[in-house]
Image 1 (cartoon, rainbow, N blue to C red):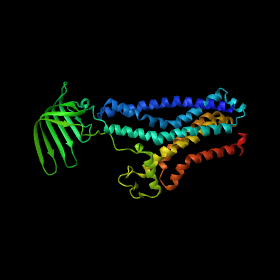
Image 2: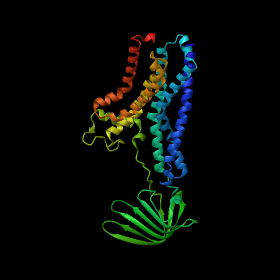
Image 3: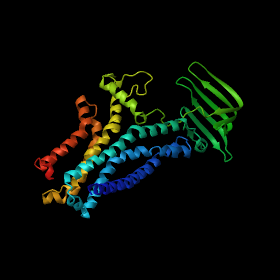
Length: 382
């Protein structure tokens, strides 16, 4: 009988969690997708690239909402059971409140596993795929971004100015400034031109103009009647260098282990690694923070589940009983905020680092110790 009761209770939590998490994730995803519209408007990517890129952000958004939605799910279901007097079914079947709390504690482990799976494997992989897709994609929206009498610089090291852009696609009085390196640059001027697609790449076909090569030593100019200027040689201005959130978890753990074994530069606060490693010259603090987000933060689900389960423990005082639900919600919210604030203290010193890493376990121990005090060290009477 106990198994059937707990099975229905856990299914109610899961159902509410699925509906809530997908709803919140979708809302956040839409808001974030709007913010990414500059991939099209400013960086010259196509709508296909845009939708693929924003879709790969779904796992990241979902993973960040799990801990809060899980807390809300337990809080809502217990509150629903309490208002419908369904909690009496648990107590009438000999289920003690401490057993009820411990069940929720054990049940939360499933959500920790889900978060670890997403944080360590899925999210870094999806974020890296999004970056690689942007890096390898063509600037295939460029023709629609070119407008009259405006400097267009959607690609790195390239500026294009067009005096007139006719409806048939013909450009007139074209100015192109290409930066080759710090000491060299190229200026191209043409009377007219047209953007054409050649071998699935955009090419700017120019007519009647000249190419001026500039460097520190000398300058020289070549005139042409017709030439093709290949736009595929230029990369997008979108950031293509891997961010910390896009790096494989195995690399981050290896880099952080170098910090533990003192393989870092104290003056520059940088990891000392070989040139071929991806975390070369990464800040120790950024590595530690990313590892904390992926590996430690999910374990706050344990204390969050215990706080939500405290709804079944009614205070004896009428004053505290009146605001019991509000207090539980506020405490749970504060712990979630605390889990994020711990990032500020991480790696300030070795002592604060260990305290930050052990904080989820310490909070669980403190919670059970408070239960012992409430029950006068007789949890079986709870």
